[in-house]
Image (cartoon, rainbow, N blue to C red; front, side, top):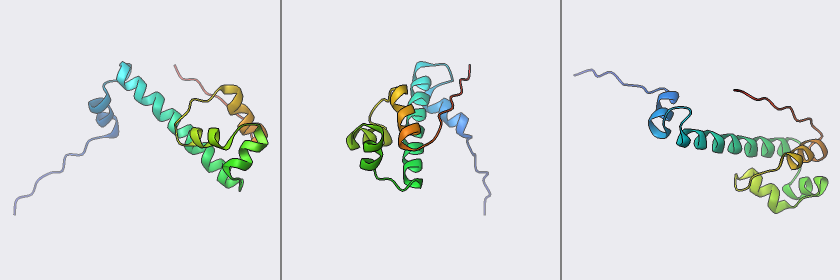
Length: 101
């Protein structure tokens, strides 16, 4: 029996291989898309924790069910003012931003 070592690749190395090094156009585009995806998932989880349907959340914050669905499914960009309204008025929370350079 021949033993072989499994070569594991770190996630960072995988990203470098698939999308290029940090700071390249392709990698930056991937990371921006991933942040948008995370935002949609976070909003969906918060909405469900509050026991709200997409339509109920939309009604509370003055938008449409379709728009909430598009945000949750990463199909739409969201304006900061709309995001704040969804979080504050629709979900009863507070938005905190963090910027990394």
